[in-house]
Length: 124
Image 1 (spheres, rainbow, N blue to C red):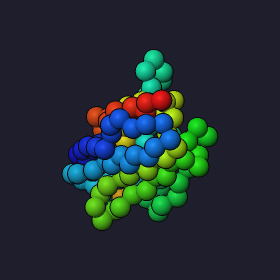
Image 2 (image 1 turned 180 degrees about the vertical axis):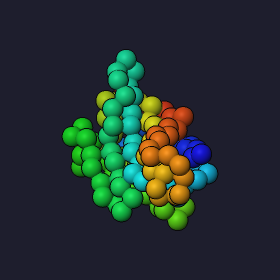
Image 3 (image 1 turned 90 degrees about the horizontal axis):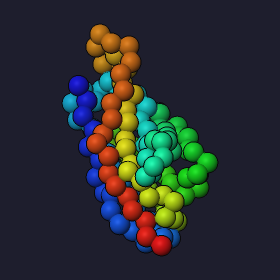
């Protein structure tokens, strides 16, 4: 089992910056790629950033150039550095981990784990 706990959300003014974190615990050796999603009020959840186990990254067009995803494997922590925030970035931010059984000698192929989310509110 892997547990993910986000932190760092809060209220920030437009144009400001904020970093949210996601601490993983449990069988972290199973973790492959990690992702950040967000869900704005009344909208569907969308993936905004991905980082592979080797550090490769990919971003949604909506955050490209403003957000940076990173991970500290020694601390089992995922980060999302957000800058040039706009009210349109207001959402609950969720971290997500892809688990591969082969990575940790477990008897499953693929599992997906979610954190509980952290609210980011950007005021105008």
